[in-house]
Amino acid sequence: MPGRECYHCKQWIEPGEAHDCWTTTEAALTEDLSEDLREAWERLRETAAARASRTTVVNVVHIRHRDEVEPPITDWLKEAYDVSEALSATGAVKRARKMKKHTA
Image 1: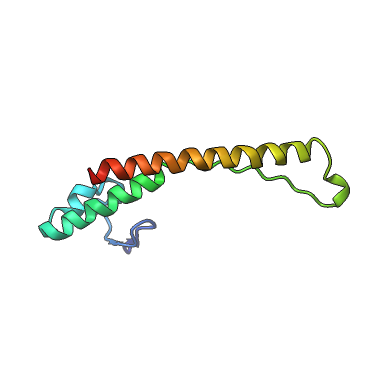
Image 2: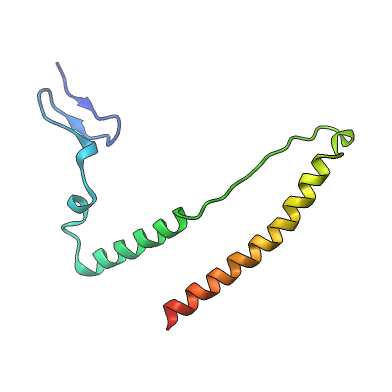
């Protein structure tokens, strides 16, 4: 029986060879990096984690004809528009506080 290619990591696996690409850890992959590269990797990872922690909620309403734009759709749109301004202002204040904290 010939070997096979791992579906996930594309590594060639010989018959009878142990292979578990899911157990490869970040520590194992980064252990041979120089100190500069390791620090760069950590900064990149922190940035990615910070961006991933932000939550975005989206609601989609399909309107196919102008006759469909009437209450309650218009009420929902007005409410969403008003809340958007308040939430954007709150987010800006939080970002400003965070930047001030990091520079202090």
